[in-house]
Image 1 (cartoon, rainbow, N blue to C red):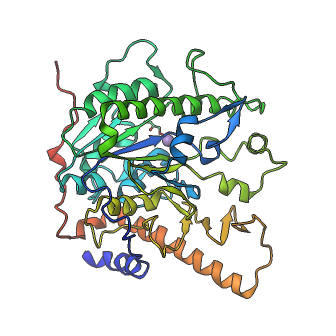
Image 2 (image 1 turned 180 degrees about the horizontal axis):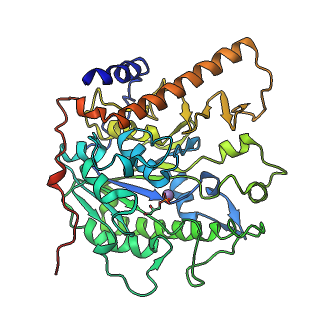
Length: 428
Ligand code: GP9
Ligand code: MN
């Protein structure tokens, strides 16, 4: 019954922070590009290898005056990886502790997702991906999210050499996707999901324009090459957006979905970061992913707030000036003044502005110094953060497991009718 939603609403009300007024509606009516940077981690930003920047195009964007960049932004995914990132970004709900919420509940649940909300305020909405439509159950979950269009692999002409690993090579995919983007009525919300920088980081000789790392760990070493290729594909996309004039009336949101290099590769990570050894603090910080918002005229800069994927939806909704007050969102606007800066990992560990807990070890976030014996104050503060993290995760789970958004009624939202959508490419 709708009573099940009460504890969720109570928690969200207690922890509500008002969005930033200065940024409210600055992107009103703009097209939105959400650019999913597969497995891209924050540590590659501004980093060099073999005398070259690994991500020159993203670095340039990162430092531009009209880009809001975040250097303490963390991925918060669980086993659902990409799908969990999508769930968080477009619903401000966590993935589940096990499995993928998009697979298990994406077909049947009710959602109040970004695409559906924007559709209802006059946007056209589309997701683009160069892989099969069924991966992560996107072909069903996107209907629940209210996507009007889903241009998966079957919508592109695939020639020999176009596919690598999980789908179309990023340069080809992004270029071909633009043919559909151009036809979307404006304003539009377009999500572009890249794949080339995905484990096992396959890349042809022709596409590789930087040497592989030399850590001696063959799983890790080619990552730098596919990351560099991904960056080049973004460079090409950006120059297309400039040339076509689309940049002028668009807001770009770029994010890395999760780590590419897993914690099983400590020796290689140490080598890449130039450290003697890796502790749990280093591994926690290694979970940072890029997050940038770019728009001509935007008041940018590098923002140091601690946040993560769960916080993207409230941030974007405020920038777009689209009303969804009272929405069930577990994140807090990254630009809000009094945000709690608590970043929950799916396993109950966390990063906050003061403390970091990872692998059950506790550290001071600013210095990385380990805390082995807590003072009374530290005990209390850490317990409070842990309590918030536990509550936030379990209440988000209750929303998904109980399909509780069925009971969430708002004047600004009409329930999505999944039968309105059909993503099959018609013959001919
Ligand atoms: C596949 C792609 C990869 O369609 O999005 O997902 P991941 O393995 O990163 O979760
Ligand atoms: Mn992924």
